[in-house]
Structures are given as structure tokens and as C-alpha cells.
Length: 100
Image: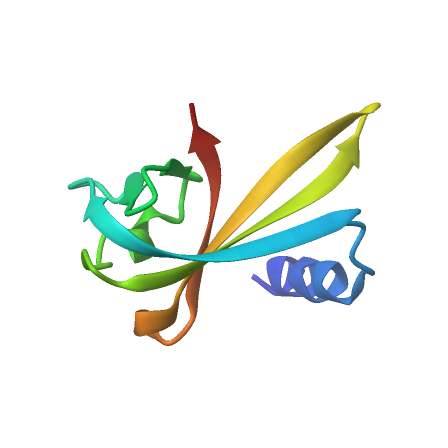
């Protein structure tokens, strides 16, 4: 447990390597019964990363969210990493990938 806490603290102190970060407001339309898939009013769907569904499963439709995507260089490519912040749930966050 101490090792995980120390690793978390180290990661939190590292400088952000995101080349570009953009956030947009949206609203949750539906949450799958297992909390794995979030559908937004914009029509976008997101798959919540494993282990974080314990938070998103409790999120309610019509909740306001802030969706941030950071473009991060990875092996010569740029990868979009999504963080979804539930404004109505006191800023609870989950990481996700956008579904096509």
C-alpha cells in the first residue's frame, strides 16, 4: 500500500507532457449498467478504463461533465487521452477512451 501511495505521489509531481489539452462541456445521456460506457449529449461514447467503473456506475444521466483530451506524443504518434470530470458529482474523474 505504501508503495502505491509513493508511486502516486511521484506521478503527481511529474511535469505534464501534454502537447495540447482541450476541454469541452457535455452532458451524460446514459451510463451502461456496469459503468463501462458513457454516452454523451454530443453523441460521443466513451469506454471507461478498467477499474474506474466503480465511480462511473453511480453517475446519473443529465449530469454535467467536462471532457478533457490531452494529445500526448507516444512512439512517433500522438495519442488522445480523455479525462471525464463529473461536475455534478463534486469533480469525480475517470479516464476513458473515445469509441468510434
